[in-house]
Length: 118
Image 1 (cartoon, one colour):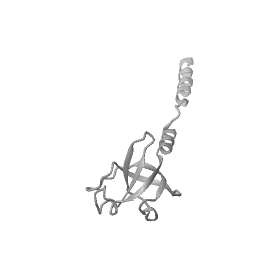
Image 2 (cartoon, rainbow, N blue to C red; image 1 turned 90 degrees about the horizontal axis):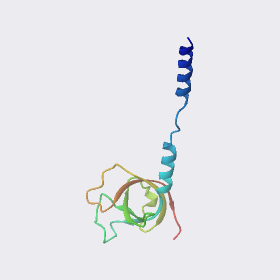
Image 3 (cartoon, helix red, strand yellow; image 1 turned 30 degrees about the horizontal axis):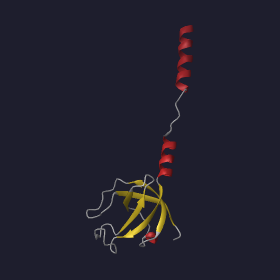
């Protein structure tokens, strides 16, 4: 009988100890790291990019490591689609397919977009 009581008590103690899930912290850190500044580029007026109907607007930016990248934003609001405006935004890499004739490094989903002063 004592063994049964010890078994039940020990199983209760071990079942109550759970490890803290750090997924929220990881997601929060990746969001902070993906807050960046870039410039909107209209491909129709830019000679160095491929002229394309599939991606009329791109974002040119520099990552924290100093690498220049060009992003194709899949959900950029129309009020931000003006050539040359500087923006600050948060992005996440998208699983959407890169348009066929689009000269970009990454397809991204943007959020928290704000226009910066020139």
